[in-house]
Amino acid sequence: MNIITLCGSTKYKNEFVLINKWLTLHKNIVITVSMFGHSDSEPLNKTEKILLDEVHKAKIDVADEIFVIDVDGYIGESTKHEIEFAISKNKKVRYYSEEVNNFLIWKNDFYNRREKDINWNN
Image (cartoon, rainbow, N blue to C red; front, side, top):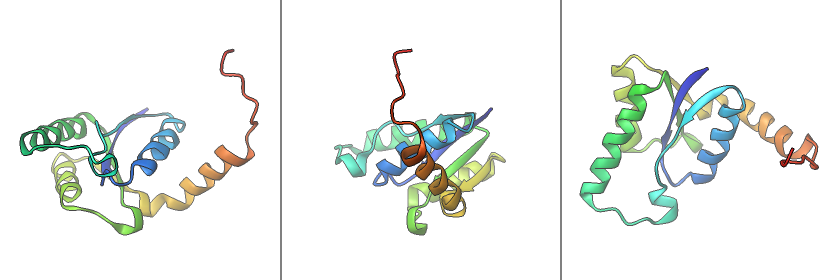
């Protein structure tokens, strides 16, 4: 199993959640963000933002690769720095924009074609 850290703008919370499922169900250990500041309008001060950036770099450091959630090709400044950091640590860098077709096939199958009566209590 690979360890993959998700990177990208936290305004794409839904994509983070779905991509986490997709990668996990393909036998990966997925590390993700601690909070979704942009999408949840969580108030962070400068010290907290710096701390979260440091923690996320540590998450990248322990991963085998990163998966950049670049919806519509969008990569913000923080994500650019995370990509540069990952490259400096010789981590593989994957992009949602390059794998979106495979993701959408999985998503369609996962939500539309599978049995809807799974009993989670068994």
